[in-house]
Image (cartoon, rainbow, N blue to C red):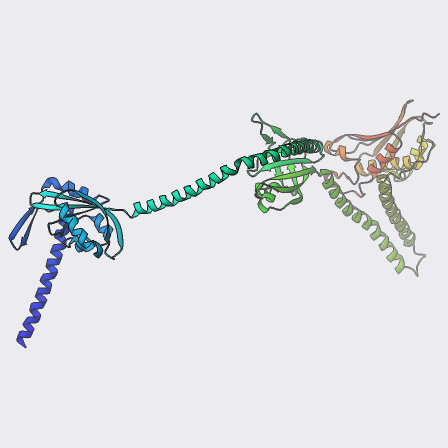
Length: 574
C-alpha cells in the first residue's frame, strides 16, 4: 500500500515537472521568434551544442516575421528549427505545433518519395518548384517553395521560403474565364463583320426612308411647338413650370404680370419678394405651395386658392391648378402650374355673404315690427275703438312700406344686372320734382332744405327713376349727416347738360371708401355706427343715371361734409 502511494506521488511530481518544462519551452520558442535570445544550448546524442544568435541578426529576424511569405529553417534531418508567423497562417497551426516537427508531415503521401529527392538536391544547389502541401486540417494548399542551403556559425541548415499560390491560381482561373469570354466575343465580332455589309445595305435603305419621315415629323413638331408657344403667350391664365429643385424654368407673359416675375442678368426667372398666404392671411409654408404638393404626392392639385400680399398694393387672390411632370422613366422631374386672378370672385362671394346677412337683418326688422302690431291688434279685436289701434295700423303700414322698398331694391338690382332697366322718358320740371321728394323730410322740421335753381328747369328723363335717385340722395344726407341740419340742393344747367348736387355738412366720407360707394351691396358705416339698408341704393342710382347717358359721383372731405351729384345730357332731339 505504501509503494502504491509513492508511485502516485511520483506521477504527480513528474506531471508537474512536465508542465513546467512545457511552459519553459513555449517561452523559449517565443523568445527565439522575437529575437530576445542571443544563444541556445541543445543536448543531443553527441553531447551539447551551442547555437549563438548574433545581435546583428535581430533586425533580420523581425524582417522575417513581417514577411507575407512563409519562412522555415530545417536541419539536415528535415526538422523545423524555426518558422515565422506567416507559415503558421498558411498551415493554420500554432507555432508551438510546427517547430520541432518534420517538414515532411506537410507533404502529401503521394509526393513523399519525390520530396526526399528534392531535399537531397537542395543541399547541393538552389531549388524552386510548385508543390501541394497540407494545412493543419489536411486542406490542400498550392505553394511555391524556394529551398536554399544556409551556412551558419552553428552549422548547415536549409532555408525554405513558402509562397501561397491560392490567390494567384484563383486569378489565373478568372483570367482564363476572361480569355474564354474574349474568344467568344471575338467569334461574335467575326460573325457580325461577316454580315455587316448586308446589314449596312439594309439600314441605308431604311435610313433613306426614315430621313424623309423624320423631316416631316420635325416640321410637324416645329409647327405644333409654335402653336403651343402662341397659346401660352396669349393665355389669360398664368403658366409656370418649375424643376425638381423648385426653380422656375418657364413663365408666360400673364404669369410675369400677375406675380411680377422678371429675368436677371444670368437669364434666370426671379419672382418679386411678395408674401404668400393662406386665404385667411396666415403665411403659407413653402412645403404647401401647390407645385411642391403635386411633386410630393404625384397627384394633380385643382383650384388651390391662395392670397398674395404685394409690398405696395392691395392683397389679391389667385386660384392655382398644378400637375407633376415626369421624365421618360416615369420619375417626377418638375411641375406645371396654371393660375388666374380670382380677387373679384372672392369679393363677390364676400359681398354675397354680407348681403345675405344684411338682407336677413333688414327684412327681420320690419317683419318683427309688423308681427308685433298684428299681435296687439289681435288682442284688441274687441276694442277696435281704442285710440292705440290707429297707431298700430300706422306702424304696420310703415313696416309694410319698408319691406316693399327693400323688395323693390332687390328686384331693381336684379333687373339692372340682367339689363332689363327700361326708361319712360318725358319732359319734367326738375324743381317741382325735387320739392315733392323733400316733403317727407320737411314734415319732421329736422332739416332746413334749400333748393338753389331756376324755377323752370326741365329735363327729358324718366320721372319715376330720377325721383328714385333724388330720394336716395336726400335720404342719405339726412341719414348719414343728422347733425348738419342743413341740406342744400343745387341745380346748374347749360346747353350741354344739367347737373344736380345734394350737399350736406355731415362728417364726410373716408377717401379710401369713396371708390366703392356705387358698387353693389357696399355700405359705409362711420365710427362704428350701424345704418339700415341693403347697400343697393347708390348702385341702383348709378345704373339709372348711366342708363340715361349721364354721370354720377361724390366729393367729400372728412369733417366738412359731402356732395353727391349726377348729371344728365341735354336732349338733342328738340
